[in-house]
Amino acid sequence: MKNIFSQLSDMIHGDVAAIILCAGDSTRFSSGKESKQMVEVLGKSVIVRTIEAFEKSHSIREIILVVRKEDTAEYNKLICDYAFKKISCIVVGGDTRQISAMRGFKHASEKSNYVAFHDGARCLVTPEIIESVVKTAKQTKAATAATHMSDTIKVADDDGNIVKTVDRELLWTVQTPQIFEKDLYRSCIENAITKSISATDDCMLAEAYGQRVKLVETGKENIKITYKSDVALAEAILSIREEIDE
Image (cartoon, rainbow, N blue to C red; front, side, top):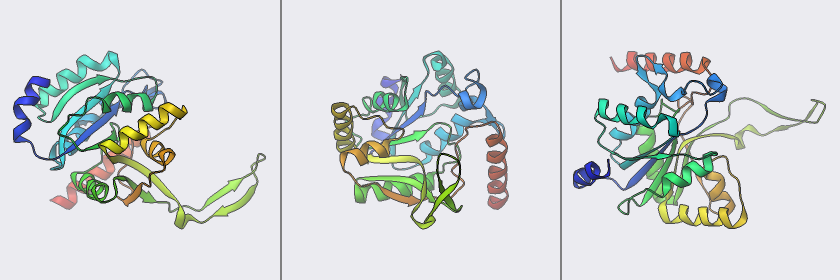
């Protein structure tokens, strides 16, 4: 894979390394027995749809897949079947998302100045969403796809009684991609290791380092396949997109 990538590197523009995380155990989807990334959504697997969006994004120079060890052969076959051009390597992930992200980051090439972390199961991402977050990250050093909360949020006590209502204008649902200047992200990792910080997303690493992360409104369609019911929702969104494009 690396030799093929080195031959294509001069033909590919962009300076962002996309690290697509597919190493989760999918327990909420199928008790870990079925990889949600390989489930078909309107005739195409979740991960193929995800990779295609990053392949089409002009800012993306390379794609690094972080997968479960037992899925490596399946991903190699998928890459050959679809002849993806930007995938530089496949990396075996760790026990947590944070470890998987760090392992993927180590494989980003010197020619990539920014890194984009994306959930492999977030297959409705578009090149336009990616470019929007990249543009903001290049202005602020750190940015993430997100959308405003539309529901009213309550804080409850231990007995389930409402304590207060939170101003929803200040609340966002964070998505991916989450994009950072590469040197900044390296510092965030070093800080996390030194202070034994555990994070559930990459924005938390930046926050712990003292770096502001700019939220980029990317709408509510950029959902993550977490439960089986999400597949039907994703297919509905894709069907509407196809109707609009016709």
